[in-house]
Image (cartoon, rainbow, N blue to C red; front, top):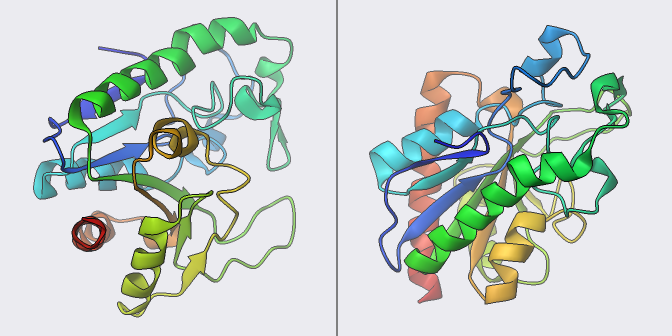
Amino acid sequence: MSEAFRQIGTPARGGIVCTADHASNAVPADIDLGIPQHLLHEHIAIDIGTAAIAERLAQDHAIPAHIAAVSRLVCDLNRDETAPGLVPERSDGHPIPGNVGVDREERLARFHRPYHTELADWLDDAEPALILSLHSFTPHLASRDEPRPWEVGVLYNQDDRAARIAIPLLAAEGLNVGDNLPYSGRDLNYTMNRHAEVHGRPYLGVELRQDLVQTPESHDRWAGLLAKIAQRVASALT
């Protein structure tokens, strides 16, 4: 059992796997972020809906999942070790006073490195045909007026092989699809840069709008849809 991650399912060599870097709002008992409790249930602490969808992908669709077990406010697992936001002192206008002056190296050693070391070994063993990287985004940000009409976004950095296949497939489902939106994978793509792009592994970076992933029914629907899309993408890549 790790503080940093949990895994559901066993990857099959050449199959599809899922990662969910921001799927938890857990804060260890010995860490005090100094924020109101309600903020732990908002997007600054967790990618809402992703844990439930990743669980369903693993349990119902044979897509094993490597899932974060700690809040991004404790340690952002999708950031480079040197990134200022790795241990955020502020998020979407909210101060995180408990992170001011903390020992970053301790957070790295306790959460970030175990998460990525295990993910690297997991992927080396599986050599998957496709990695589905699962995140979610808010309909708007509190800190600035920014319309976000997309229902799903597909993110990528340099390797857009899977994205180019998935975007029209998602659009054919009647969805408003963001192409490297609501933000660009060229700016924030650490986990996939490290574990996919460097190794030439195809990946599909998916962002789901959080107002669409609030209920068990929506979790079931998105898991089914993403499993179908991921399978079609993996088949097209072979």
